[in-house]
Image (tube, rainbow, N blue to C red; front, side):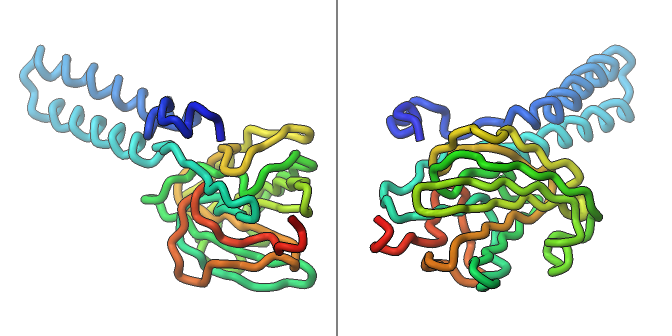
Length: 224
């Protein structure tokens, strides 16, 4: 996290760059239709302008990008996304933490730990409802593997029934700070976090988490 963010110089909330056209296009349309409505005095055109303005407002809400300040705790691993925890389970030599994002959650994805991007792998797939268990392996998804000083950490961006566009702004060799923004999923989705079996999960199924801030796991003290 930058010093500017910690000092509060960055805006408390903004709009993710990937979503700005979704806000501006209907907003511009609303302005044009409103101008036409004033010219001809049409109630129907005023209704259309109102719908376009509502669409712009919803997109501004959906693509909001609030400032997040990660905890200073060096053992902390933070949530890669906002949402509700759907699964915390051990699979082989790794922990899987699954987070469901509704259309009302912030859809920005953030790095759970500081590290270097080792691999980014995109997989085509279906668009099942993100809360379904099979969506994790059947749906379109993007894997971001981070090399950290304490072990490999993987974030998986999973598209959902409505979310059909995964955005990832990093590639191999890029360095990420804990809590740093790296991507976004458009409209209702799921984000998974895969961690080494040595860590200690601190969340349970049903918990609400905030990307970049909520501690979802900790590295063992022996690894410090």
